[in-house]
Image (cartoon, rainbow, N blue to C red; front, side):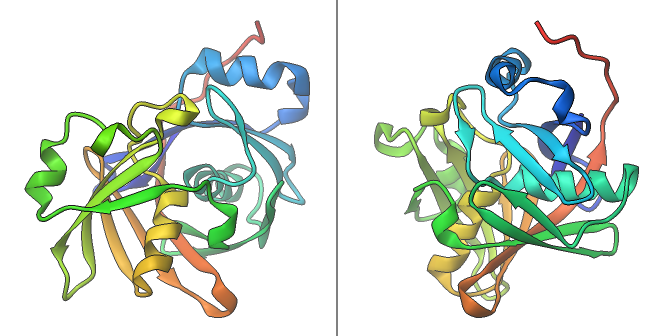
Amino acid sequence: MLRVFCDDDGSGGNPLAVFLDGTEVPPSARQSVAADLGLSETVFVDDSGRGELHIFTPAVEMKFAGHPTVGTAWLLARERESVPTLRVPAGEVRVRYEGGASHVAARPEWAPDFEWERLDSPADVDALSGPPGGHDHIGAWAWLDEATGTVRARVFPVRYGIDEDEATGAAAVLLCARLGREIDIHQGRGSRIRARPLDEGYIEIGGRSVLEDVREYTVP
């Protein structure tokens, strides 16, 4: 179990479960395992050397997701070996490591179709009691400092069985693509996502991960 997109002091971050030996969990059981764990995402690594993995929310399998790929890349480097790419159903995700953080590059069209609504101030974002307008797949954001590209955000992927996500890499990909500039997203209770446009339409997202604990798990 790890936390992904932590702040520089190791606080915050979105919890993630990773089965490094994912082939020990039958494909038919993976959705029920993800639902049982109840985290926003759970990863099953089918081939650590090739970076092949599958990602599940409590409700559905995802073709691509941000914090699972960033976190799994970091964990593979820590526990097995670093990888240049991860292979998910959406395509090949490029990986970069720097200063203890991991970064992945993905295409905006791989991300789920998050809506984004800009609010007038960070205080308005903080004051939300749920998704704006009752939408089931939306993020709300405001500039903390437009000059430096610092953003305050919250994301509500209710459609995927998650009331509010602590840090949402795929949504960060879409927001970065929309703004067309490097941004530093402060999301949830204390998480931080760096995002920047790359060549050929790719967006890179990255941040720090922390290993929370290692648990034994029996497939129900």
